[in-house]
Image (cartoon, rainbow, N blue to C red; front, side, top):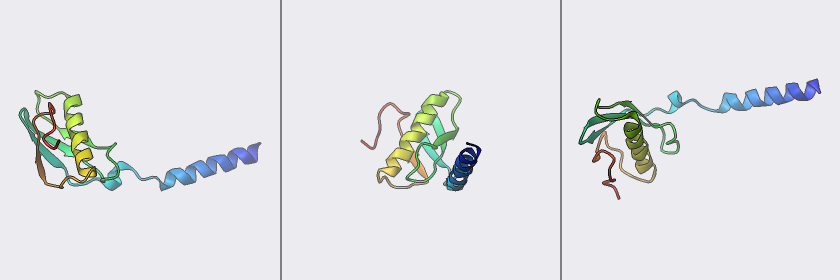
Length: 98
C-alpha cells in the first residue's frame, strides 16, 4: 500500500510541475474604454481566457462588471477578434462586436 501511495504522489507532483501558472502567459495589459471610464485588463493567451482579469477600473464600476468586461474581451479575441492595444465597449450592457 505504501509503494502505491508513493507512486501516486510522485505522479501527481510530476503532472503538476508541467502545468503552467498564469504569470507565464500574461500579455500586455489592454485598456477598454467604457462609458464609466477606462478598465485595464490583464489578458493571457488566446486559448486560456479563464484567467483574464480586471487590474484597474473606475470607482463607479463594480469588480464584477469590470471582470465581465475583461472576460468578454478575452473571449472576443479568442474567437478571432483583432488584437488592439485599446478596445472600446459600452460598459457591458451590450457587445459592440455582436
